[in-house]
Image 1 (cartoon, one colour):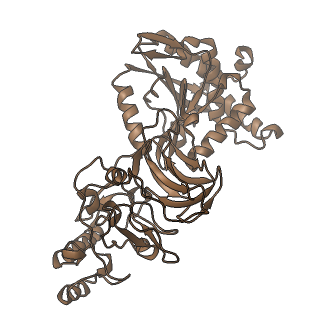
Image 2 (tube, one colour):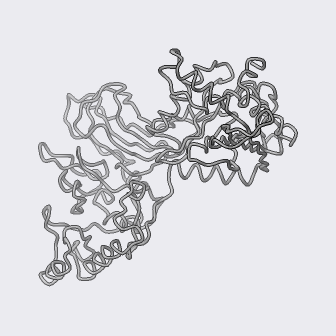
Image 3 (cartoon, rainbow, N blue to C red):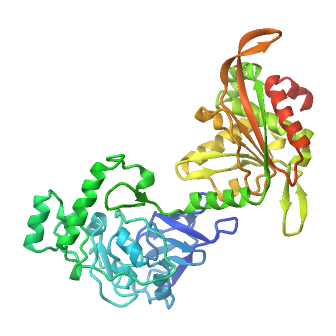
Amino acid sequence: MPVFQQFALPDAGEGLTEAEIVEWHVAAGDTVAVNQVLVEIETAKSLVELPCPWQGVVTRLLVEPGVTVPVGTPIVEIDTDPTGPATPTPSPATSEQVRAIAPTSSDATDGGAATSEQVGGRGPTSSDATEGADATGGGAPGGARQGEGGGAVLVGYGVASGATSPRRRASSGGPVAPPTTAGARGHALAKPPVRKLARDLGLDLDVVAGTGPGGIVTREDVLEQSARAQGRELATYPGDEASWLASGTVSADGRQTRVPVRSVRKRTAEAMVASAFTAPHVTVFHTVDVTRTMKLVEHLRADREFADVRVTPLLIAAKALLLAVRRHPEINASWDEANQEIVYKHYVNLGIAAATPRGLVVPNVKDAHRLGLLPLAQGLAELTANARAGTTSPAQTADGTITITNVGVFGIDTGTPILNPGEAAILAFGAIRLQPWVHRGKIKPRHVTQLALSFDHRLVDGELGSRVLADVAAVLQDPARGLVWG
């Protein structure tokens, strides 16, 4: 007899409360093994691949890609004993799951009319799903499964292999838009006068979402779509198809796109607001001659031991900050508001602010205070590569103690960085420029940069902050000083 196990969304780390289903790596009917990757999810900080805890056959995908669900929500059903009949008994929780992930009427309008998955009917075929066509509603929750060779998938449990679906967030409730009916693939339902109007306007009728009875395309639908297309042509940035706009809703005149705040961007916004309005920020600045640092970078790039890592001035700045923390360990602390305590950290997890297409992430090099220059370079390279690939794990962003942000990579001289929550200080490393500089009593071209250190004034007094920044500057000005302090 078959044994059906429902895999619930786990807490992937750091008290995760919800996550978005990004991409399924399996489909209904696939045979899976233990630890095989089932799905890729997006948390507030990173993309995470979830492995399968059982061996068996996938019977249902319970959540579509693009939908955000809370931790504990079943997302896939697996038959761990597929030798019996292949028709599982619907779970009593199925209707609750459907209600939990069903979009509001406005969501349905944005992403096309609600498919029958929200009302427990039969889903689109793989070809329909690829074209974004709406499915015919009907049936009861937990109705018929995918037929043999039919290509259809049960609504509410994902799309067929190769299909795409609009990215939308889960709704906490609200009315569900009624399902609409579409004809065969490539044949929208419309009356002859409406079809003629679409032809006259040069509009592809099959891309128009029908709002009439049964999903029929009305005259108003065609005019609205035409105005939207014309507005796009007249928009400030015509033809802008940037990836960060893909999940948004374009206004009727094409001049605005509204994109839901989610995942990394949402978490970053919450963290920055909490930090800015909780910790009293103070920023101190220092302009420093880093010509000797640039010479050291050139020497390291020619060193065979550093041949496999990318050596940049940021590496020396990171090491300088670690040396400054060693000399002034009281800056490596956090404020515990609940217990009214200052927590001093006897380790340094050095955070590196990284800009990614998904937003800002701040992974950290664990126990960076124990690392020499080469392993520090390797750690920074790994974090940067993971951040750019979107594979930064929650563990890599947890428990940072102090952070450095390289604004110079964007050609910026300096800034006033906002503290990473739970940390007492953050160093901004500016662009390095060749400038006229007084050196040994003469004006010479020298490599110069600006540093900025923001700190929590509850924890760090002006004197301490200034001493830390001065020490960082001293090492960058003369890296040999690091041998004495190290």
